[in-house]
Length: 514
Figure 1 (cartoon, rainbow, N blue to C red):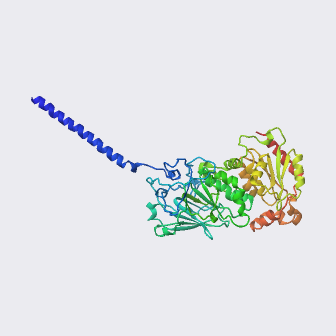
Figure 2: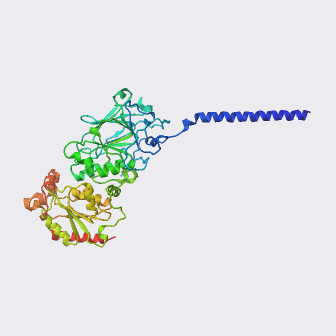
Figure 3: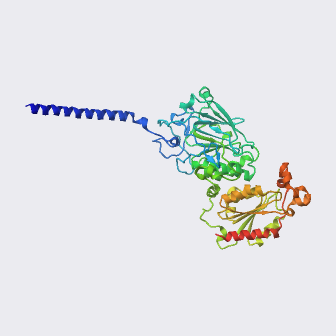
């Protein structure tokens, strides 16, 4: 009996142990399922995705909102872009440097309004840093993550930034006036950027339109009446700033009024349409208060008509830019050979300028190029062609020939391996010729040849004589700042076609090379 009672006592103890074990497991499960939502993690870029249940396409949407409170899940700030070294120097804030596209590029389409009711715990917010950086010698720029709102004004378009709620109590109010172009010392209509604090939140305008896509604000004024400046100051830096969004970005243009600038958005519609699947917005005339989870003001411009790959997302360079713009204007893909490879005479386009640095013997120049074995297409002064038409005409050529000037910008439409021939005017113009066209051509995969005119080929020789300092001492005029008057504005070229012929022969040999 004593052994039997001991067995019963052991069994009871074992059963109590099992019951306790099951009770503990049940309690642990209850605690886990009630607490698990707080352990969910959301990427900062989740702000750019559609909330669950609204289609999940990842496409940005418009939402009209007359009450304008900021949705809770759109106030989280993405981690600030860290500074990095470039050419041994610390680089200013890298706009869009850490971006990755959240949705594939699609064709433009009407977006359906959606009520954004999804909510989720916000990601950890890093310490608040200044949103604007003015330290670069070429450009100013601002980048905002969270709640950024645009508003047009009489003198300036404006951007209001509300810091994340977790940082609002410690945030300091700040104001910046930004020339939202890549050449900040050129006068354009400025954008006033205000970062608000807790005491001046009432200054923020009420949102009337919500966007899930990010946006880039840029100015189209300044020197863009010049074709080269349109590319160098706006299109190339707009590419480096916005390309990382892979089309999922809204482009907000400012300084669109006055002079010849009204045509900019129409003229480069093909390029802008390839860069963004939304129609460009004329911010100065816009009556909406647009609200974004991510907004960039200003353009990254590293060099004249060029890109520094080390300072761009995904190491974009001028070759990538040329291939992008060729695709934007529906030109043949890179695999298509040069036209001259199809067993025919190479074709050269000769640019005949209308005013300064023009060929005064243009017909003789064209005849000389033909004698050298080229079929010639003339780009005549005063011809009004759309960019699409110019792109198609240049693409059909193997060679682009012209004096230093904006027409050579059309090298962006040449095929890989084509040749640009720049006729460099008199007056120590070689550094400008190389910087504005020579290096960019090499970087975009186009071959380059320079022909420097002799003094006798310059109209300045006829006007001032060979003993004038204008001819024999150009450096004097660079030192006193009058070089532009003589060498850029007064000079024309009477090309010595006999002296020019070896350059054309060199170009033909280059085209025969693989």
